[in-house]
Length: 602
Ligand code: FES
Ligand code: MG
Image (tube, rainbow, N blue to C red; front, side, top):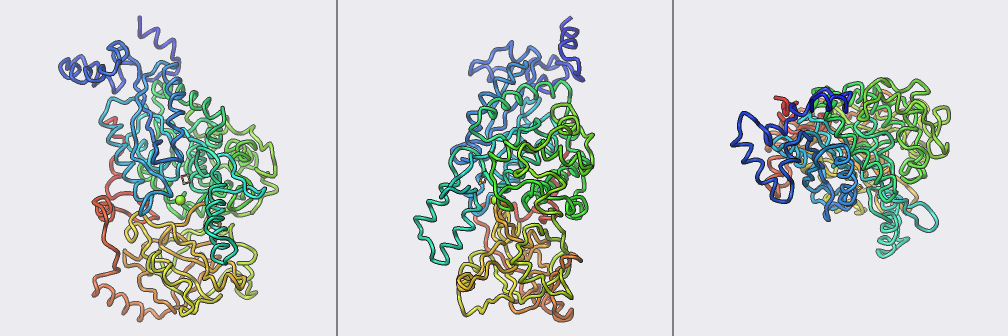
């Protein structure tokens, strides 16, 4: 009788209360002793036996908010609404802490902690009586860390963004997170503003709770969590303080309970087709250059071989539709009001550009059902496909003697940069330059403004020792500003290349995420200041113009000297991380970790 009632109530149910994995803890008829042991402690804060044994699914709220994680801190409030939704749908909510990650506050870099948060959450979801999980995402690395963990454990999971901050304003203009800092630091270097004014501009960009309001890595990754189908439609873009943010938190809590009964798992949603959709949507968003690292990582944990070649093949030709800083003009509130991710997706579907509208999403409907009728309500913020901001907005994947793979966002190449470097009529897509090589960010800061370095417009700035092993986690330092004396002469930017990363809030056309990194003794480790290098954007090549024999000799010398030297690890995790980490093009995953899959079902 109870089973019949249950099945009537949940028409789409594929499992019943007796199939819940939490029953192994709290209601295991084969082992009453262990049931008693597991059960008693969860009663001690007021839960009742009835709640834990009446066949309700236990839903974790993986909480990324804390005082250390201000971007995600508002999740502490939103979790109340999420919990209400879980209870309303007949579940039991259990909130658990995720290792804190704050992008700009963590030394040496928050990227180091993505895999740590992933490992911690895998253990929590696998080792405790949890039937489904709400992933509270926001600040850059929190999104991939939680999606990687959900992919590995593969219990029903739904993501919930904390939402961007309100628009920042300074001097009557939109002041976007990060982007204003990159601009202001050039004014500071040129002596146009002082330290106090610099701080005032920075603070103006952060007017409320929430994550970065630009199309940086946070907005990118939250949008891509929706593009992958892991959030409710429209859930990514709602600003953190808006009432709709609380409402979608409630709806998300309700929905995860049904997902448990429907047994709808991350591997059902995040398929190869879903990743190809996400690559296309990323281009239309003008998404961050950190996205390939994170999506390649999530995919590997699902046994999907996603590579930087896929990003170029599926993403490069896609037009840029979203007019957000750093590539454009607007900020997060504008993006939400114009229709957010569903409107972008709707335009792409309308133009036949979304490869797989039929994939299922977290709400149980297909991406096409959710988005095909959605359109921009403000064509200046979300452009139609016929009138894009840029025609080919995706990444190219460069290869050559400098490295096997590096990402470049060609859509942010400015007209001034194009004129300086890509205007040779015989060779319009290529440029050559003299390398100025920096070993890590400290070396760069030490030398960049020294006139003795003789840096001029014919130089290419190269940052190495900034990859996953070199600077554990990889530093966001490849977007190097030009020397102050060149800025004062009106030179805006020099070409930058490196094995580190770049903040998604920076609009520089750098060549990034190069793999192998110098610390793996690849081509970058052999480069010397003064070498000429050649970049060809049409052939997608990047080469050292130095004789093969000389390079071989340098390689021998390097290995005799013990390989490329990196600074000592400062913590146990930095050491383990360096021992286990894979290159950026493989998602910076940990060795062997992607072999553990679907572990909750085994
Ligand atoms: Fe956390 Fe940008 S620094 S979202
Ligand atoms: Mg960042």
